[in-house]
Image 1 (spheres, helix red, strand yellow):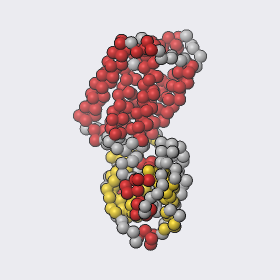
Image 2 (tube, rainbow, N blue to C red; image 1 turned 90 degrees about the vertical axis):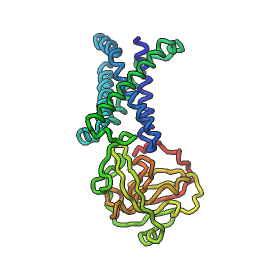
Image 3 (tube, rainbow, N blue to C red; image 1 turned 135 degrees about the vertical axis):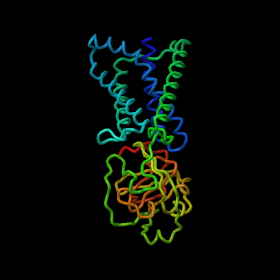
Image 4 (cartoon, one colour; image 1 turned 30 degrees about the vertical axis):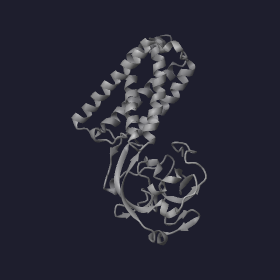
Length: 328
């Protein structure tokens, strides 16, 4: 049983990271399946506690080297699961200066690093014999138990009237829809809100100002910005579709750069589904929301909605040739 427990925990850690990345990276309905799977994996960790506890107690009694890091791993896992459950309820928006989702992600990254160290220091290598029928039955029972717990938790969240019962399929909670002033202001990691006076944007080598943009056909669209920090907001945006700015796009990707140096590459064939927005609601963008212009990318998570756009260029670099989540 010890061997099964250790291998199961290692496998669950990998699945937790994989499903978490998919759930955070996608803004489409595919994220729902990943989010549900992510919840199941987290509850499987809880169900393994009775089997893991004797192993931990034995290790502590023997005062094995590195026990303090093992304890840190346990704390990180507990913090990850607890913050995840709080995010599901929607009753706690933040923990200190961080949102509940940011705490969840941070604790998960820490747990992953400590988990790799733990496995390398006490490796349990999988063997073909581990696929015996008894272990497969244990996996099925563990998954079914997690499913029952998840269904029960979701039922309780809905019955209590907690905000979590109305969260989006990505797990995000509504913030300020239809009210731009109430929509949170966030940016990626090291970016700070710049205060800009100029309104020019370089598009395919041409510097375009407010008068140039005014002559182009504008669209008003309702789109949902779903931020990876755990909130979403549906607003009315006004701007110019990128295919009208770029014309016939001949390249692999569209590279959008912010004045902060932040950059994302979009597939070239998505030009007719992306907008360079200048207005939010009935007013120009505020500094916090991306003045003078930002990208509106329906169906994509918030880190794709580049703010303070400085340039838009067609590139020969494929859109997939970038890290899934920008690092700076």
